[in-house]
Length: 467
Image 1: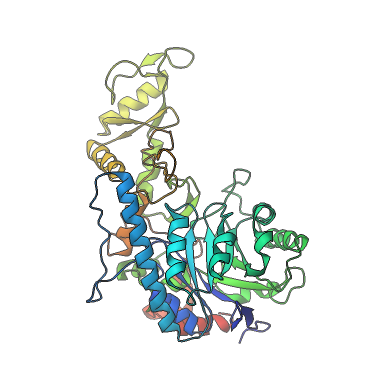
Image 2: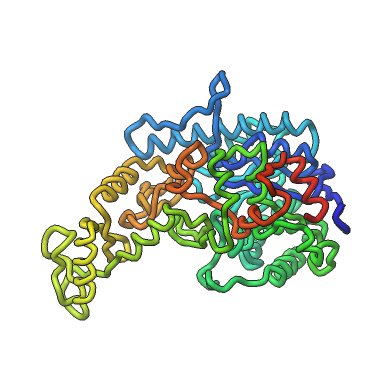
């Protein structure tokens, strides 16, 4: 047992202060979450478009049969509720009364509130807490109170938590089980890097977490309410100074990347194999996500293609003037695109290299793609099923007039399509592969030598030693 680490009381249950990260579409399910809880920790079922099963136990593909985005959005909500309910029930059975079961939802996913109500209504007594980030989930506490479950907001600064506390959470203080601090420079998946922070200049998490605790104390929240450190957590021995530290109060630790490589982990074998090959720097913090948030993923050919697409970009104007002195004569129809002389030369180079189609972006720029890319981009945009509350790629919005009002952005991608694909045996090089920035440890950590893949119980036992 690592020195100083003690069980905590969570939603009335004694558990290890070890939380399994939720990890989006189908990367965490009943098998991993149930096993994590059975090992005495807090297991987390991903309630983001979770899988359902047919009577033989096979995963039911999420196929959308209706014609309009709004109709497909309703199908998506039905899939989301049905899948998450099934995952929770299975996880609860596997846990066998040990540990705790959380669900993880993204506030910016399409129909988030409707899905959350649908899940909690059908899983009463099985879900102990709801973890929620990717946005400012003001109504999280109100929804949690309706079902008597705890809630755990995910924030990346004390400032964000202060806004949530003052506006909503202070009214439901008794159900605030913990606050998750997600390091925006180290965590995998979407994160809360703000416009005031430099993606290229990581900040030490200690003073940021200390500032978060100070905000919590201002609100009268006891130090026994844990801050969950998420992002960059691999060995507990690296966090020795955080445990039993009166400045920080109670600290728990979230593991998102390490549980990907377990026997119970639902991700395909090709994904697990790829994790064992990663080197430092192979995970990229980028802003291609249609959510508009920064996120971290393996810099595979899928991500490199998005980088290259954005690099083939020039500014344009509909009117001649200033720097816009030349009419664009490649990639577009008509003569209403004015560009600078240098950009005209660049556009001709792109065209000559086979990137013959210019697509407009919301920022008055053009990106150059191949004819095949253009067809795929436009098909994916047309097939939008409304998986986000706001989608830059398709210009979908899940309420009011159902459009963001902006031009659809071809520099992004359909996130639902690629995450479903990689989670269900799609090509790991041609789909988005979320991972934390310390995933390179799979290759260097002796625990995984000779291709060893632990059970969740073996992983939790190993973590509890400090390693």
